[in-house]
Image 1 (cartoon, helix red, strand yellow):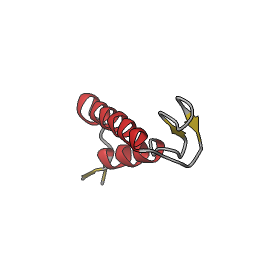
Image 2 (cartoon, one colour):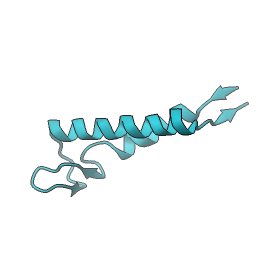
Image 3 (cartoon, rainbow, N blue to C red):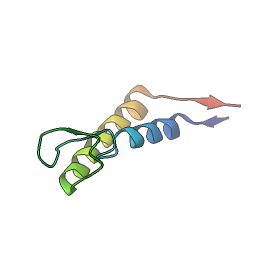
Image 4 (tube, rainbow, N blue to C red):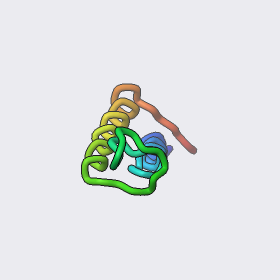
Length: 69
């Protein structure tokens, strides 16, 4: 049986937390900008820290598992 939980969680978080796709934190001219399709080095760092924190919570603390087979 394969455990698809980490794969699904990682892909969903990657898509949702891509800087500039849905939101950018911090934005270029404001604190939060929505759907501007631009990014900066600081926003990449902030989104990376948020991604790491959420994936750690979901996979290690909660232990999400999706099994097939």
